[in-house]
Length: 100
Image 1 (cartoon, one colour):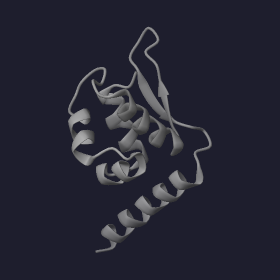
Image 2 (cartoon, one colour):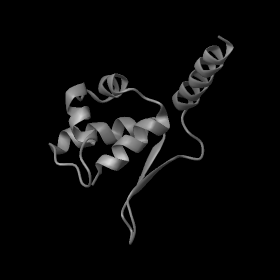
Image 3 (spheres, rainbow, N blue to C red):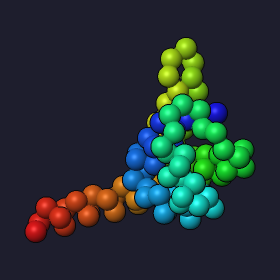
Image 4 (cartoon, rainbow, N blue to C red):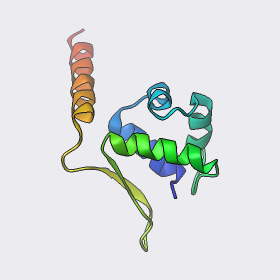
């Protein structure tokens, strides 16, 4: 099961805005906002949670189950090309802001 903390962390690691995750998953921005405000296990339609998890996993997120500790997230060792492009795009934005 996915937690609110995992959802927030996964989106942050990928540097994905809520609107972009909405487009990738087919889940409304308002639903994503509501779920991200939750702590612990997410309470939502299983199709909604599956769509979010599939979209984030397709971009390289690995969801770690609670295994005697806290559930977590990490990126795959070799993330897909789209995450590498997104990270590079984020670095370019930071450089432009720093030049001003």
